[in-house]
Image (cartoon, rainbow, N blue to C red; front, side, top):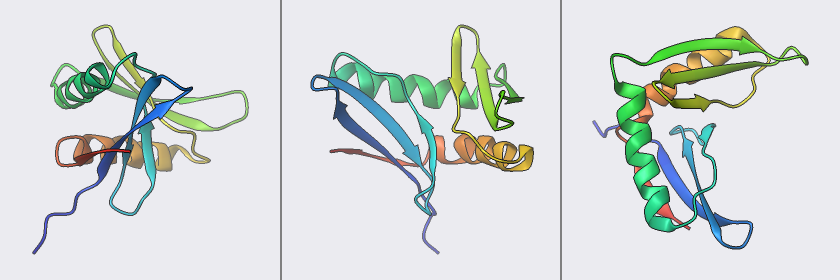
Length: 111
């Protein structure tokens, strides 16, 4: 049976900055990074992201915004990762678990 993988995509945004996104195997956007100055620093950001979301010191919480949308927040030391918005707390919790699951096994595609 084939391993179920998501994918990271790296795109050039705003003309000269790079950003990575993590997608689940069904195409759902799980996480979008901040912008990076170079392609190399963006790739390094993916490696840091992988390490941090899997670290046993990492804390995950669910937050609700003023529009009653839920987001997961993954924190490890000074690194904070805020997920996409979801209509339910359960959807945000499931997305946070998907990020942890797909972070290590997803291929990287540079667009």
